[in-house]
Length: 207
Image 1 (cartoon, helix red, strand yellow):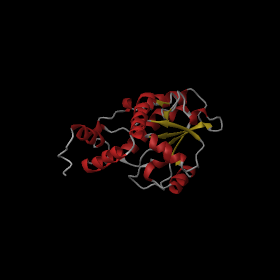
Image 2 (image 1 turned 180 degrees about the horizontal axis):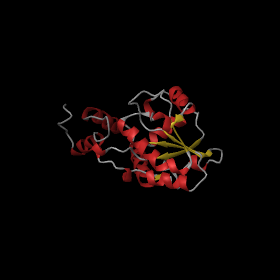
Image 3 (image 1 turned 90 degrees about the vertical axis):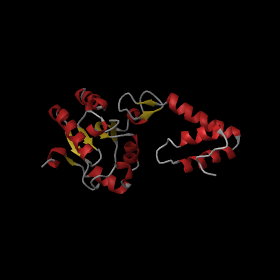
Image 4 (image 1 turned 135 degrees about the vertical axis):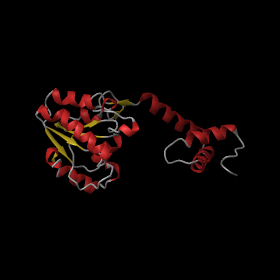
């Protein structure tokens, strides 16, 4: 049966909702929905309730804007982390990628995106001002710019650099072990870890 001809409106609606997920087409969505229909009712209810609870109760850390179950995330709350070091990343996936290297012991700042005029994303749409406030509050020695090696990432790096350069902190960027155009989440852990350990002065990278 074609995925476009459904015997049930309920089935069709469920497939259409799954097909809204990134990377999921109608055929894949149909397979997922049919898989759920083969499960025990209690398991499907638990699955649905988990998604509802995720959306209704998830928070963002008031300090770094990482996803959290509490007002302040576990990383910011961890007294063993190096509080004078901030790694600036685009999104939550990048936090996970850096953490998986086990080579970084500082804190994070999640921007929630990168500057992209073509996509209508301006500096005011990102958590840049809150980063500046964190640095202005004192106690920060170094800010690592760990954004994608794309035109948009470089533009965002430079914008942040101009905002922070007069505040007396070291501003560094990842060593170029990461290929141009790569996102952190797709970089292998060894390469990313080395890029963090061998980070370079951002101003020197402009020359």
